[in-house]
Length: 569
Image (tube, rainbow, N blue to C red; front, side):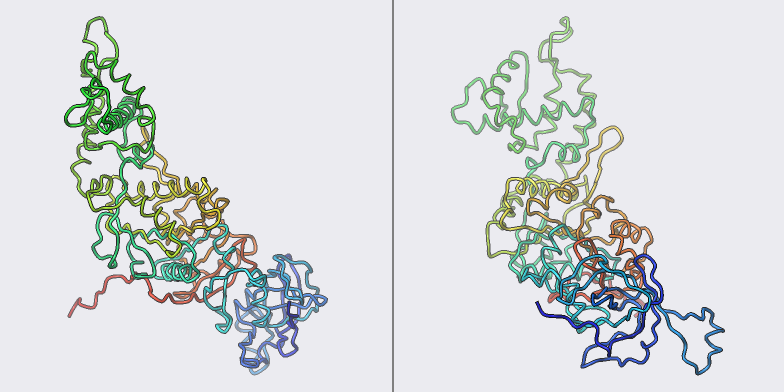
């Protein structure tokens, strides 16, 4: 490891005169005397945001200059100085310890003493701190350049960037999408694996750098985009309940039985050797109508095809679901001859009427049915993802939700099914040797979603579960959002690194501050002043919070807003 020389006399800017906790107050006696550059390298002279090192007995305590002012205190005192030199002082936040060998430690091994010399940090020292993990030869992702010194490149070790989940947050126009686009391009260049869930279609500019899947329609998508749907039988019961919103009293049991009956009907129709009595149970349409003496036959068929009936992903004809829910409304016993065994229970029909109406409306909505009951020529998105995962030459998979309707919470349910499927594969060891990153744009729409009402509600939490346990299976998530305040508090707390662009909203900044490590809190004060494309990297998996100008992606996302140039012309 190369020996560092952080204490060059030409870089001395002052001395420590007071230490308070993790802060040191510095007299910047020489800052204005230093040149702007030293041997072609930018030289910090006491500007807010710059890095400094303090010589503490031969060990460098690394810090950031947070505040610059004068001991005079008032404007009239400053103006009274005339041409005299104005005493300048600053406050430094102490961040980490830098050994002369190049080794770094997060936290302060030795605190400064009054009189210790303070130096402007060299690019060599800065790189030693922010790139500490890369010195071991670990793979890195080039992210951009240091804001205070653009001659310093910032490359983040992959284990720190994606190892414990990543969040990219920022207000509209701050460069959040730019950063996600650069990450996707970099993953492709590094031959990694990233699934990008594109909520608005802006990442279609990735073109041939990604494989593209699109729900509902491929209009406006790159050439070669595959149209996909997600068959309704891929839904878990909770997803289906979120979709149809049955009441827990009488509607849910009827819906559950209707699905079981339709699975049974499908199995009987597919079995060329099915018992004739069982075949007679199934109407020409595919329904099962349990009348009078057919109850016993129905139970016998259930016993024979029990594996199919109980399989949560067994296919069935959803277009018969409304009729089958009504078919389930039968008397289960002979109630003192009030009705014959198997006759229709009119009271039960009344209870399920609203559910039947919702299902019927659904069946007549093409933009929904074309997704959950895909026509010929439309692929199963789960099959396409599985095929992409097995192809070692494919590195970025973009799934476009641009043309997917918002009706019936379809977007949230589709994304939840994708997340649950990926997590199930992860638990089975699918990513043990080849980790996968799932980037979710507009993530606040898909985390911790509850649909329904106070009488019957469903919690869609697949990606919350990935954030909590996916890392140990090789499945990590990149959360991208302009509204971190709308994310569950527990999600950001699971994130190892956060790339924070400009945030003006107080609630959004507060949520980021709550999730930030203690030494990152002061860095969040810089958030409102960041320029587009500039971001602060911080988190438990990064040695010190740093401000970076993110590298422009080769193909920037199509995130421009509408043009008003034609108005008034």
